[in-house]
Structure formats: C-alpha cells, structure tokens
Length: 291
Image (cartoon, rainbow, N blue to C red; front, side, top):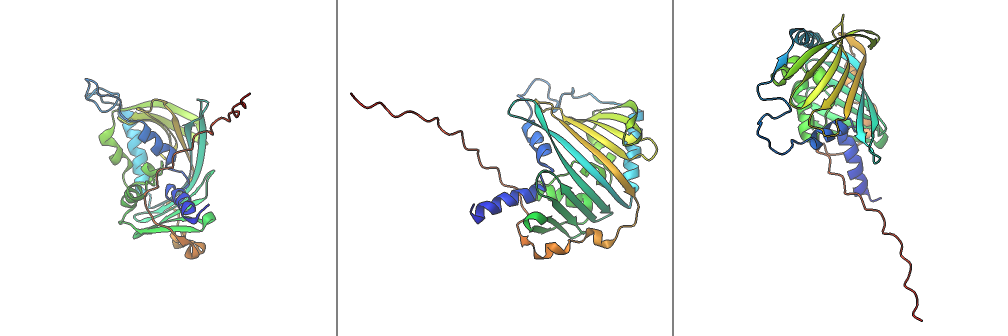
C-alpha cells in the first residue's frame, strides 16, 4: 500500500476517533425527510403537537442541574449501535469511552473499540486527537469552553460523541426548545445497580428513553431511535463509574509523552470512503475450436 493511501486510511480512522461518531452520524445522514406532504411539520408530529408531562420535565431538569453543577466529572460510556448486515437483521457494534472533564475548559476522552484506540485532549486553547497504535497526532486551535470545543470538533472533523449532551454546560437548556414529547415511564431496579426513574422524550429527530438515578440524578442508560430512520435502528449508551467533583490531576488533560514524537496529521473532515469494487466477473469457458 502506498504511503498516500495509508495516510488517507489512517486519517479517516483518526478523525472519526475510533468510529465513535460513525453509526450515529450515518443514521442521521441516511434518515432524510420523505417526500413533501401536505403537513408541513418537520417530523412525525403535527405542527402544534407538544405533550410534556410535568414529572418528566422535572426529572430531566434535575438531572441537568446535577450535571451542570459538577465542577469535575469522570465516567465510562459504552455505546452500542445497530448497523444493517448484508443478510438484513442488524449487527451490534460497541465502543467504550473513558471521559474526564473539568469545567470550564478541560476534557479528555479515551476510546476503545474494534478499531484503533483513540485519545482526545482539550485544554482550553487546543484540541488534539492521538492514535497511539499508528503514532499519529492531529492538533488544532479550539475556542474556549467545552461546548464550543465540541461544536468546533464536529464542524472541523465530524467528531461527535453520543454523550456530548451529558457534558455540555446546560443539557436541559439545549434540549428544551426542541422537545415535542416527554412522559414518565416508571421506576426500574435493574439498570446501573440502583433505582432509576425512566423518562421517554422526543424531538422531531429522535425518540429517547433515559434511566436517571432516583437519588443522585445521574443518567445511567440512554436508548435512542431516529424517527426518520426507515430501519428504526437502535442506539444505546450505558453510563457507569460516575465520580463527581473529585480532584483531578492537571496531568489528566495533558498529552501523553508518546504523543510528542507522533507523526503530525491534519485535523479535518474525514474523506468519503472509496466506492467498493464490484464482484469479479464470472469466468467463462473459451470458445470451442472450430471443427
């Protein structure tokens, strides 16, 4: 394989950060709106539809307030995404991210999956993505604040984490303008090793079920289906090992020593995958010799 082809392949791995964003973004891209209908609503709900149960809203607000008030937090996020197989039934692909943040401008995400391990570091002024296995490093300037840095990473390189809605400054404030539906499902004692309150909510784009700790108000599980996805593929995320307001060493958010000698790569949007080659043409028998 030529070095240029290898660079392109590794660059796609780097910028997708271990395919964390892949299934979620692929579904969003695939789930385009159907042909125009008389109803001008952008989603499946009528334009005036909005059903928001007070208890459900209160639980979402309480969880948001708990997360927003945290000066530091660490947790483990395990994401599972369905993707269609050639046989039809979907296959499940999983990734795991170890997340650490310190407000307002420190973030580290270490992701493992079936692809290469990837590490993302944000220190308030720069955003770096490191792939230890390939010894590659991409670094770019970033705006101040975790929210702005996450937006910049998505705009510059299509980097997106499903748990981004948990670590922004005001989770409910970002969600509430788009809410169409929110209702209380009940309590569960089988998720996250604790009692959780279960809430379902929806926007024009996605239907989500969330399990929230009844005592600590920390989310333990999310389950999402994009409402415009014709396959109705499921996306799940388990959040565990929560530590809130613990003391984090400054070294937590520094690039590891190995990154200092890594080969630099551009921090940009991943290239579109090359079209797959079709199956080889069937072998044909040579024409018979004339008699």
